[in-house]
Length: 112
Image 1 (cartoon, rainbow, N blue to C red):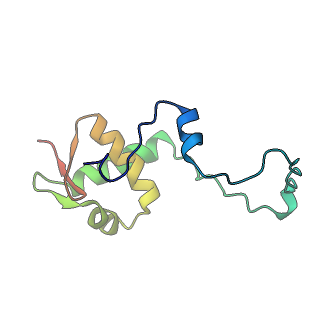
Image 2 (cartoon, rainbow, N blue to C red):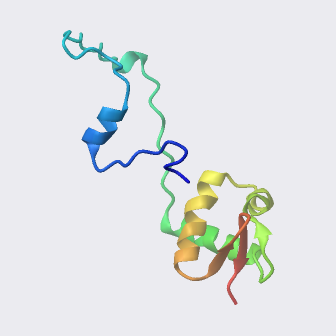
């Protein structure tokens, strides 16, 4: 079905380049791009690191909120009045530890 729709076999980068239309003329020299200075760049701030005690407390809050019946992860975030960037990594930790289970549809449940 893919071949009928026009798919092409790609075995490597040469096949990709051969299938692409010519975008630039490689015979003409290309001027280097101007390098931005730090004065004009918006550098994103890294999130603050939590202490082990704060992380353990967040683990416990999540486990206390979850039960055997699944709830939506966004509901958990609202219930804890937390940021998704705080809950996401911690929920992955708990999932890898086998303490919670992620189910289809963004649902989380505590493993009992």
